[in-house]
Image 1 (cartoon, rainbow, N blue to C red):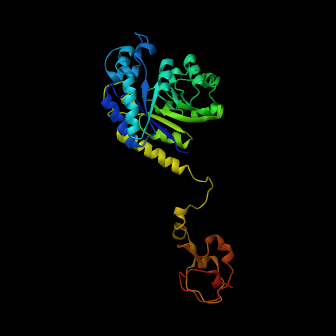
Image 2 (image 1 turned 30 degrees about the vertical axis):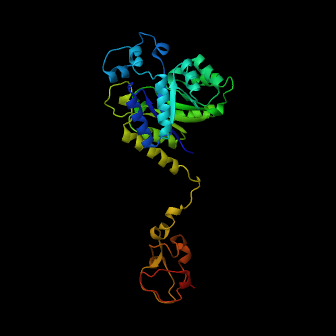
Image 3 (image 1 turned 45 degrees about the vertical axis):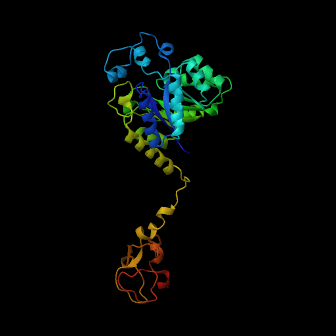
Length: 338
């Protein structure tokens, strides 16, 4: 199964449309499936005095409120439409996360084929209830949540027309960057068992190894922040992949898909079939032997190539007599024995 790879541009455009388009160019070059932005109005998602998260304050380098930070990062209606058109032109799908009901309805009016619930909205009942009514596929992030909060969110999402089969739950840790010891990747497996849905992983670690490992564990969706340059000022750049890292992550995921795509039956593969004769051994004689000689263990030696009698027949060969003379290090065949 092909993993859905969502490259999270988020707010790494810094309010600049040329930068936003450059992010789309990077995602296309990497071969991702979706480029995801964020749809919000600061006036409707945060109070005027809400403080920045510690990581946001550190990354921005100035003291300000969430409101003032977000106000500079809003995308207008014309911005959305321009980015959608640019994605279409480049053969990559546009995606965005809404943070309130108004944003959900707006994205729905733009023809979004699925919705993404950010981790912070997993306890927002009016928001989840709206998604239940819209009944389009949902990707649910679970950063900061426990299994009981995920269950409550699932109960709300499936309370109307939305089917459980249309929901993918992403394991996630909402710390930027996430310490490796807090990843708890096996929780993704618990989520799958608990809810019987497709699962994925939204990653905030530094590097690419954890999302690749998640695919090996069964993730069907991977989401990862990326940026043009990690040194840019902004809340999410420092925990984002740079272009070459995004390319490497996608390549790694696609390789893991191939590696996990076999029959699951242990058997000789077509690529290694020719090496069996080269790497395996056959039974040879150590010394010159005369016709009629009865073979003992000391007469024999396993040597490459493996195109003769396999050493697994060692005991069957011992005690047989030769029907012809053999030179030292001749390969033994069944026709040599009586």
